[in-house]
Length: 413
Image (tube, rainbow, N blue to C red; front, side, top):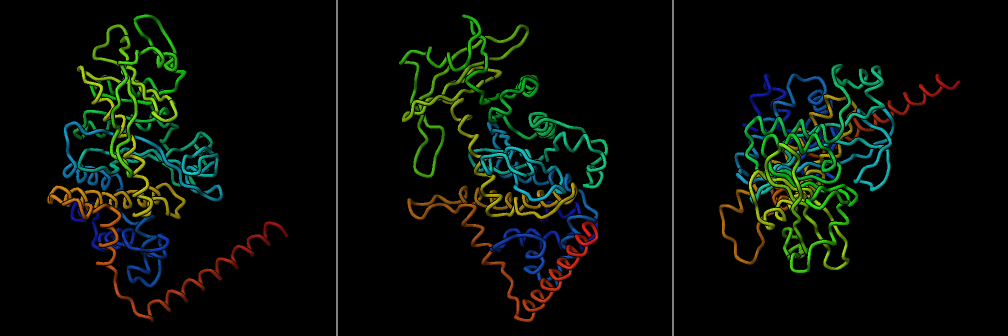
């Protein structure tokens, strides 16, 4: 909290932000302003709601501090920047950016918010260092709706790859040490993103579809067709990283592809073959200097760290449990959840770096650290405090119910 304390001009929001982050790290069955305020010992959620909506502090400045905090502890010159989007399922139409759209969280089209995150991934650990809320065209074409949700007037529609490019540019301009970038097919198919990375001489391993045309010395062919070209001896059995049940072994092949006129660097098509099913996956790769196949495979395997980051940030720090509707509140909740997860990721990295554990027990994980930390900080609240909150909740629910019925009666007499 000392890293971000200077972003809060007054002591009250500074203390409340600390209590809020402690609430996000607590062992609560559900994390929202009500439960976090009760955990903090407040008499109502008004203070926590004020912190997210009206208090004077800049979430983007806190995000910059989070990025510096993560990089200071997880720094690695060959680190990988990983980008991906995740969705939060929502009801109704008023939450900022919500619409019916595909989200991998549900695996289908649902009413949801979608945000793009940038994760810093090194051998020491990984954590999110930036975020962008995806605002669909249905919102940007409706100024009144945007104004109601508090979206800035100058915001324009941007695709997910464009949002990723903004975050990467900002990170590299801030001297975040990273040699590689990776992402899935959404980002692998965008020429502007790859062009920006090549301009900055940042290597990339980007997933592409099997139909993506690839230029070789023999002509232009779909990536799926080139997978059948390498001879048997060109395939190597390599691990894409450590999994929960062992190494993630696949067969890999590397195919040289032609670069465009006037461009520099080296480009390859990386092909991954599942050893059990024979299914192929394809990656378009670039590096300013020649690199071996093992390096490309290592970078491709780092893409899974963004999924691990989402799982930990949602399961341990309440990233997806916000019940806010407006632009400012969403960014503030998300930023504080990123801070809570960064604390866990950095603490785990420090613990692993400072000890040489025997085969048993296993090193402390983010989940285990959160459990221990929650037990350490859990305040002892008396029965009177719990009864006051029970009374407050029931009174609020009664007023809300009466208000809903009254509004319905006016709208539909």
